[in-house]
Image (cartoon, rainbow, N blue to C red; front, side, top):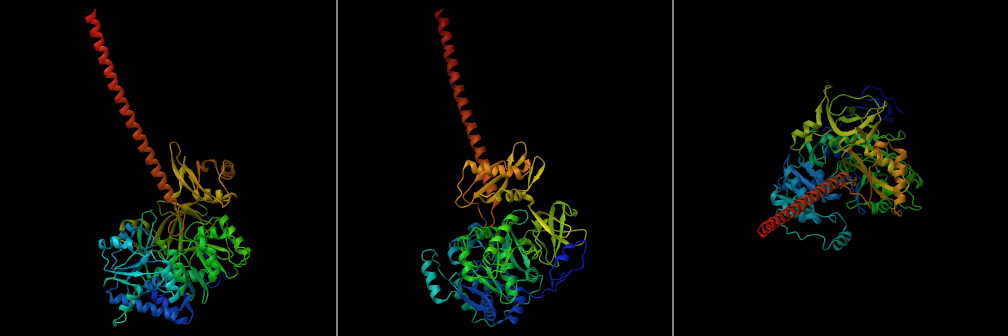
Length: 614
């Protein structure tokens, strides 16, 4: 291992592998310009594979130029916004780079987004053109007139299939695709491409590294959906950093691209990085846990990048005697992976002939997805790795700029070439999240808690907002989950904070048991005893709830906010019931009062009669 010169603010440099330096020279062109370097080096290599069909780098670049001509024919200019609402298909990737070629900005949204979300994103980005999946066109039809979108291109999963497979796809999709009335402004992908044939003007617009290139949507560090504006440099720097940090990358290596392109991890790590390395990406538009093993065995990728829930599914699969020797690298990101799960997956891979060990990464959309990764052969229990080249990490006391000592929990702050330009149309949140410190650097305040050891390895705790403060103690849900998941009957769990009249907040655990394990009082008692043996008393879950599954985000993360929302709704319903009960009591009291009045009147009458009688 090459020992780089150490510095007080970058102790992790000592753990970089041979050939990795801290000062990299990045492309001074656009994303498509950086891709062109790979096209020049590997013109006849396969750029992407899609349901058995493959396209070389040379032909891929020609496809991009053709789509760029069509964009220009539709009036798209430098700085315009074009929204892509598509799964992982060749046409979506082609359109992404074509948008970049003409100097426009690509706004990426997931086809499974709700109708009102799509409307909000289109209005916020002020998009001129929308490229949308046919299966969800109905959602667009209802809101398109409320936006500034002038042209709509309707794409299909079957667009890039060979003739026979395309016919089979259309047959299988009968009844699922809404009726689309095509006009001059609403066209199919094929019609859109045809418009480019007659365009003979300039296509390539020279863009600068810091020009805005991509808008991705994320919960952001404060939880509200925001558009995150990323530059050409952000993506190009990420590609070069990943290429050096993941030594298994390189010409001819294949990567399974299953994470959606609307997400930074999917777009930056699984699409732009491998394409700029001369690798082959295997595009899978419709992917889920049920087809995981089938997909792996069919395509035999060398590298997989997945979220922990998919790795959990992999390690729980009944693979039999099937061999995974083709798999040389496995990267986990997008959510926290516990040490227990990593060990479980590593054992599973080794038992099935793979040399890969899970490498855990960390990043967020505001930093173009990845900024940190565990080095090969240098894993430490609980770590998310060391920072990428040219990337500074600082752990600070929350609410300050003050760096904490090694081993002390604080907020992660990141500075480097992959940090976003800012939030779209939201200067207030941008100023709050991108802060200039006394050292003169601009730091991204992530909202994530972690600590750094003396060697520069980072140990993730969780989102600051997820931290539970119970009777003055800091309680970490992710650690409680890790303990619960160690129980032999547990498949997975999630822990949230719920209100408590005296302790302010306490932990509540939602638990999914393993297949074949049925809930019983004995199982619950066993899990509680396991927690009592391994957790401090103040950190013990106050409630346990057993479920068949847990809510997931579109990327596959466990959606703990959905569970928190459920608790808020439950609390509101309780308050409504109490209020209703209170009104009933008041009505009864009034009824009693009226009856008492009647009784009093009768008493008075009786007294009068008695007087008369007397």
